[in-house]
Amino acid sequence: MAALAPAGRRPCCKRARGHSGKHAKIEFACAKIWHMIAEALFTPAQQKLLALLFVRVNEGFHLNEIMRLTGLGSASAQRELRRLHNAGLITSERIGNVRRFWPNKESLVYPELSGLVQKTFGLVGVLHSTLAPLAKQLHVAFVYGATAKGQDTALSNIDLLLIADDLNYGELLSSMTPAERLLRRKINPNLYSLADFQRRLREEQPFLMDVLRQPKIFVMGDELALRRIENPPPGVYTGGGGII
Image 1 (cartoon, rainbow, N blue to C red):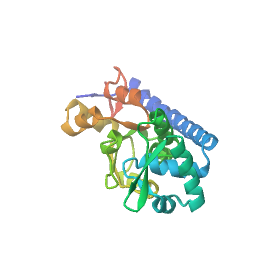
Image 2 (cartoon, helix red, strand yellow; image 1 turned 90 degrees about the horizontal axis):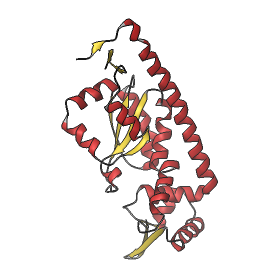
Image 3 (cartoon, rainbow, N blue to C red; image 1 turned 180 degrees about the vertical axis):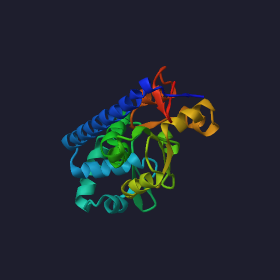
Image 4 (cartoon, rainbow, N blue to C red; image 1 turned 135 degrees about the vertical axis):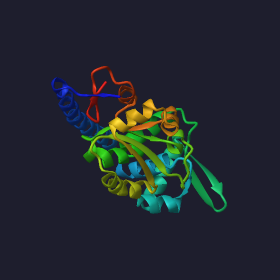
C-alpha cells in the first residue's frame, strides 16, 4: 500500500499540477497548429468531404447522402469527389441505382492522408477540440475498440478511455454532446482517476489489460505518456495522497 506523502514530499503534487498546466498549454498549441495545417492544405469543402469519408471509412456514401451530411451543394460535392477519385484517393462502386464512395485503402498515401485528416478535422481533431477545455485535468485520452481497429460501422460507438484528476463524469458526458453531433456517433467514455487507473493496473483487471493490448488512437497525450503512468519512476506522486 502506498505510504502517505511526507511533508517534505508534498511539493510533488504541486509539480504535478504545474505539469498539468504546461501540458494543457502544449495541447492547445498543438491543436492550433493542426488547425493551421488543415486550413493551409484543404479548402473548407475538402475538409467536410474528407472528414466524412475518412472518419466513417467503412460505410460508403452516395452523392445525396454526402450533400446532406456535409452541407455541400451538388456541383461542389461532385467536383471534389471527381478530384479525389481521379487522384486515386477514394474509390467508388455502383450499388443498385446509386454510386457509393469510400476511401481507397490501397492508395500509397492512404495511411498518411488518413492520419492527417484524423489529427486535423477528423475524429481526433473533433475529440481534441471537445476535450481542450479539460486539458488541465487530463493525463491521457485515447480511442480504442472497433474504431481504433478500423472495424467500426455506422452503428458502432466510439470507445474513449480517459485518465484524469478532478473531472466529473457528468461534466464529461455533457461535453461529449457537440462531438457526437459532429461525428454522428455515440461516444462511450470510460473515465479513470490516476490513482484508480494505477490500482486497477496493479490488480491486472481483465477489462483494462485487454484495452491496453488493443490498438489506440491518441487524442490527448501519447504512448510515452501512457507508459509513464503505467510505470511511474520512484518518488513520483501518483494521486490519492501517495507516492511510489
